[in-house]
Image 1 (cartoon, rainbow, N blue to C red):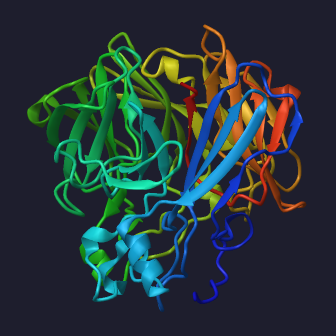
Image 2 (image 1 turned 90 degrees about the vertical axis):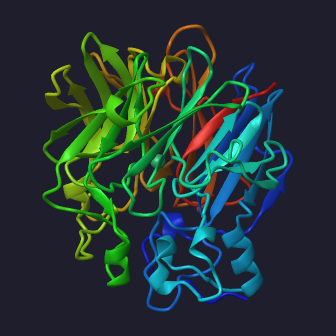
Length: 468
Ligand SMILES: [Fe+2]
């Protein structure tokens, strides 16, 4: 048995734990699914099996990974969801209670557990070379069967990835290779970064090592045709802080932002040029590309990290940390410029993955145009934003709707020719559906809604795997 969950904004409402696994063979579809839309929409997110340990505080980044797979084909749809069977999940399920501190904070760990076993596998779900990886940046990828969602265990790529691995790899359209990195790769709080390239067949092709200026929590990075860029931004990791009862990961005022630039496929070390600038923040990169001698990186950016406490444990307000679509331009001489592309309050930006690393036009986001004071996560809108003209093509699902990350599914040769898929929770009906929108005419609203058999809690990242 488990104990009641505490009253916490990320354990109630949109984020109330669901705690059940389902198989639904034939879902109700409203509207008409596009012809030829065939494949699986995956989503990962936190669904804590147990409440935090006594005295510990929950964080939305911390719940056990629950993967949803919604399969679409022949005008029909089915779904299943499964917990990722991490070692942490299995140990805590057997114990009937939580054994690990939030973020694996050793101060709160049960003496029976090893810090090395802390893996929530809850952040992204990434198909590559026939495999499917549940990703959480502190650990190697956790492989799952793409059809059954059975957990297979860590993928270490021939023992070369035994520690952190980003939740945001990039697939290079030039050759299908997966570029990734591990932050804190020589232990929590270390400045070491491991840069990985896994080829289109799933074989590890390249490993390089570099050091960032300080131990930041690097969540995402940028890949262009010629470069990789590692953003070191002022959310730091400190075990010393954690042992004093303060946050493991915290925003540190006064730290500069720094960008490490290296040739794509480079060897790390001295090949990385680091440029410092004023503090800025982003969890997520939209598109990125080389523009002459400049590198352009579009992000969901904010002046200070949301959801992350300051080093003294205090939390920021939403208004101080709201994300908008911003363009970072890093000049060949290292000078840095930031400008806003669109002032919409957004959460997760995505692109047509066929233009990953290339000059592009469309960023796809979930966001809200409503006042957001005091609000946690009420993103009622899906939008396509033209990053050259600033034109926004959006659709709001209305009062009480919570949209997740939109995923682009190609259906035509040109950039942005295809569909946007996003999970939506209607809080007034306490029901969820997968919305299918035309990426070329988002404002027209969904062409189809695939209704889920039960509410789907708020989550993180999604991916599409086309049918074979
Ligand atoms: Fe992320």
